[in-house]
Image (cartoon, rainbow, N blue to C red; front, side):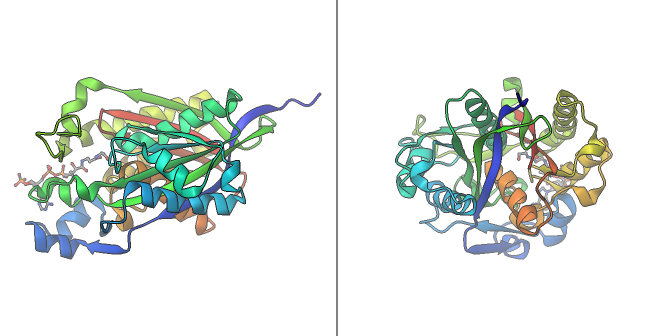
Length: 325
Ligand code: UT7
């Protein structure tokens, strides 16, 4: 008898970025900021901003379609769609079910998951658990965000930091040996007592408020490196691994200084840390699949390699996951 276990295995990735690119210099025409300040404090050089038709559902469907094509899975065969988003088109139907309709994924169920910038890690964790439980054979995990619609363009401390986009990863059930591919573990955390340091001050349930992103950046920064390094260490320990075993760290792309800080705490050389914050800025739940795709499509992330994902966002929520390709 062979010793196999069911795992959620990476099968394909797809992305969508809005056509419009906005540089730091263009942001400086709107608010009192400068390219120098933004680059020095965050590493961001540009972001994509969505046109009216480029909604979370539209971009998520485009990314999802590409992930299915890359994996060679027909949409009708897909089992489920989980979307991390804070910027859905509608209160309902969920973004996931709108994407299901757009893709013609007739057999799939779907739901949205609200965990702000940790949405992709949370979604991946839920997908992994459902696949290992035998409930579903394939899941599209999508992060899709249009933060340009919730930014306060009067607040230079936040509006220069975020961008729009979507990324989708297809996970499929496979029975594999212990050293085979798949999600090895994922670890989720939250601390609601820190809700006031990063939030959106409204939603459809509060019609008095349009809802803008509000952040105490210094406080978020203060917690980020410690909490993220803790989640990464916990994830490595769960698989009996050391940071030196990791081929790639694919972190949430909020700030170059946070990314470097976590890499340094783990003793990871910078060339093994994927950075796309310069190109995309912070795309919240979309940032990890966008960064992953960037490295994967460049031929950097390769079959057999160990990839560690981590994110922290509003809630606070944070978590990490380890994936062997
Ligand atoms: O994805 C969710 C997680 N979010 C994050 O991880 C964000 C975490 N926080 C950060 O990335 C950083 O705290 C920021 C990039 C938001 C800010 O960087 P900082 O080094 O913490 O700057 P600061 O907030 O301490 O502000 C320093 C100065 C202030 O001026 P004074 O008071 O020293 O005169 C700000 O008013 O920079 C000023 N400032 C700006 N100046 C030019 C703030 N925003 C800007 C701006 N352009 N856009």
